Image 1: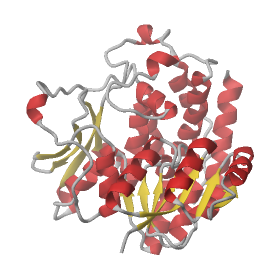
Image 2: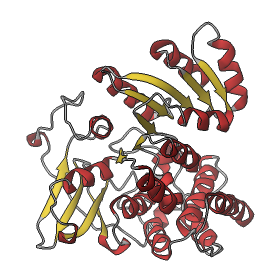
Image 3: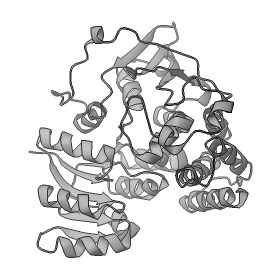
Image 4: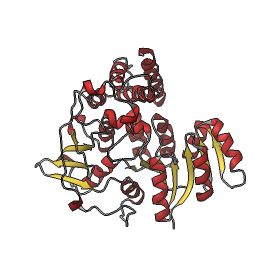
Length: 381
């Protein structure tokens, strides 16, 4: 029987590649959601014929509802509609490829329905890690990583017999488009320059996050929750070629790595087929095609976002959520041309200083802290 999947965020980079994998594997697509791209979602609805679809943008959703009135797909409206789609019962796996904290509530909703999660939305764990992992454990739900780095770690850990044999997790970072540049040189970089990632094709928000290396800081936080390790056990190495996707180090200093060409369809497919492996739509890795694989220590002084995130997860509570919310706003303001590139990390750091201390926080606390972080960033500029 064909696997049934839901894709939240189907019009983005991960979403469209997930559909490519689904087509090659012969999966049924039961649910599709997106933010505001009604045109592409309409094309996807006509091809995949899902039972339900939704757009977070209410105006676009109403237009889509009219556009596909001749189909059998029911179109839901707004964030509530996306969340209702996440709760759809007749599906085996929910791929969450939504960008930002908007993915948190749908993840929790899908988990509450007992659905396994193929997680590409790192902000789910950055902002609500304790809540999400507790609910997943309670419901017996698998959270399968789609980020290439976390999928690599997940695969490396599969052969481990005892958790106490693990010494460290090593996340690889491409270094983004500004690798090797000084803070002085970064003062005047443009959005166009920030969007020129050397290896990956991604959406604008995550590409800017890669340029600031905030993306690696968020992945550090995500790794802490996914693999149940202390923040001090997560190291980062800059690996420009993006062939080694991440590594683990054992207590005897042996290191295990996962390699592959830089194509997200490998981790997407493995999250959907786990624990089985099948022929991939991705080209074979021929190491002789790469003359060198290089490794560098991150420049933590220039790319301050990594250590801001490390400090946030070390403090715990609402600190990671505030860092994420502040970054989402600062990243947006940079893309709008309202602040400079270096202002992003500075604003995130200042916002985290205002983090409320709340014991045993709830989902409402997380969402309120996110709003506070965004407002703080706007007030600071």
